[in-house]
Every structure is written in structure tokens, then in C-alpha cells.
Image 1 (cartoon, helix red, strand yellow):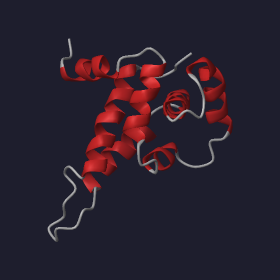
Image 2 (cartoon, helix red, strand yellow):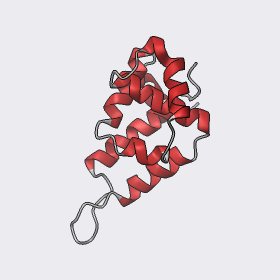
Image 3 (cartoon, helix red, strand yellow):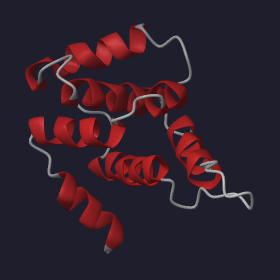
Length: 123
């Protein structure tokens, strides 16, 4: 069972896309630093509880075909057991993080677009 809300996954997807594209990432020297978005994304992931972190990793693994959607519970257990580095470091080191999270959500029958829309239109 997924132990993170679709809205939180969508938040990571949006920030990961910004981080990858360099939005808010230019220093005065013109060099890409990624500091603002990178820091915000890292802090958001670090602030998740252990169950949410494991679920987020599992969704990414499902999206990159390391596990299937049917193996969600096993993927979550594996993420908890194999957690050897900070989750934010591990996930932010994945070049296609946003794509894999979207694919993982879709494989699990969750609409990434609907989750992102919910972030933009709170009730």
C-alpha cells in the first residue's frame, strides 16, 4: 500500500523538473547552481517520514521498471531495508526522477496530472 499522498509525489515531480531545467538556478556569475530549487527539493524530501520516503523510492523504481506495480509492497519493503544514504541524495541523483515518478504513478493507476492540478487548485 502506497504510504505517501499523490500530491506529495506531484510536488516532487514539479520541483524535480525545475531542478533539472535550472529554473531559479543562475548565480550572478551566469553559472548554473541549482541552489534555490535544489535546496527546496532536498528539504522537502528530507522532511518526509520514513514510510513516505520508502514509498517515493518505490514509485520511482516502478517507473523505471525495477519493480512492477503488482510488486509495490515488495518495492516499499526493499526501499526501507536498502536505505543506506539520505533519500534526497539518492533520488536527486537520478537524472530522470520526474519522468520515473510520473511513470510509476501511472503504473499504479494514479493520474500525475490530476495530482499536479490538485496542488495548483487547493480547496
